[in-house]
Image (cartoon, rainbow over all chains, first blue to last red; front, side, top):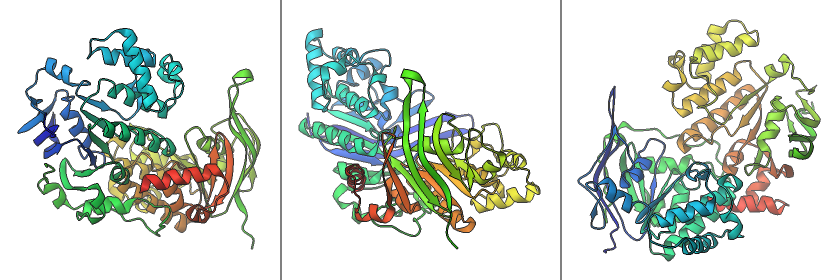
Length: 286
Length: 253
């Protein structure tokens, strides 16, 4: 397999409603290699829809269209439900925002981790259990044997999110889509969870799609950044070159954040230019 | 003239449950906020920062200690006069507005409750003051964006013309660009109306922008009360505060 894991060209996600068609994603193109790609935007910018479209998790009346939507040699756009089930989790998996809602409340942590693995691999229960234990250790959970027996409500938010990450990485997928993986967590836990995710993704040479509203956080944890506005990509750059960003929207986002160390009398308010919405999408293909 | 304190809290303990089930959410918290001051409560989730705010507002009946707000010692029940002086803005503008009431109804109800007259003119002015304009007067919450809803929630809190605003994470549900607008609005309103703020936030940047002093909380206790200036320069005495500062600054890099 080549180093280009995901190849997306002219992706469109739209919803037909009684009052007309709403276009959530309007023709964006990007590729994902063995790298960490950050997708940043505000609510309604289409960033989460992009992540979901890659896994074909958009239900009717939502429609996904693209000139090309491929994972390696697999054409996601024309894959059957059966093929998609084989792909999801095994090759591309997703960590959602809040572990409270993405873990099964009536199964123990161990039972759901083992289930997640055995869906994709023919492996004995005991072996799966051992792999789950190993994985929990990797995400820095102390006393993993005890945690395997716990129910989701018995663990904290930060621990729940680390369990989610462990569970998603268990079948050793090539791509991880993380949709706001730490916004439900406290700042002090946030960095720890991100560090763990970052290390695992790098050690395994995976591709990471990191979807977030927090431009500074993304700049810290990614190699490349895509900035979305109104369903389009307005700018893309290397994370290390974010300070050279040109687009007024990117600059607006950067300047709107209050900074403890550099106090300002007034925060800059973003003045939205209708031309941003109309401008064609920038390609983030490599 | 000496500056009197708008809020004084001494040995405040708040608990939930009773007997063996009792857990203390806030333990012997003591702080004061000068009139016209802006005070932040920071800490992680579960540290008891919102509980202090709710205890002041009279939303938690199980507390002990002493609280004096605007010169009035607080007992079990709050007087109507208390709510004319103290108002609260909640975190989630999607949950704190009645979905079937127009902006006009939300605001006029708040004004009627406090026996205000000349409501029509007041609503028009209030909407101007929070930057919405009268065009929004007859809209329902679902016709407003998150930022606009939070402006309505702020307008509602300002309706009885209070002296003190209790702000519970007023911007954490909003996008950064909208957060900037709301923070600017709160700063303007405070200056124009000489308001006193007590704000709960987990975001040190937000607290640093809007407050002069802050209490750092951990597991129900106030670890230390510091000026924002010393947060900025790192002149803090407690390890926990340093830890919070380090994570906040590292995540912003």
